[in-house]
Image (cartoon, rainbow, N blue to C red; front, side):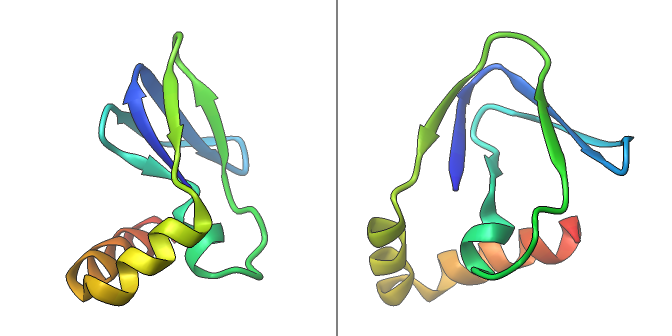
Length: 81
């Protein structure tokens, strides 16, 4: 899972534009939460962008202690499916 630190990304599914993402949005959350899911979108950088990798073990630990964060990310996933 990645956090967009700067720049902007576009999301495409089946070559169709879905949405633009910008600083403080996340990408890769579906594959992270639903570990065995197939890739369902293509992410393209609109211009130079900087992403921060959210490490698997650190976010899982955070989810265990912060259920609201987990619910928030699950909500994002449901909207993006």
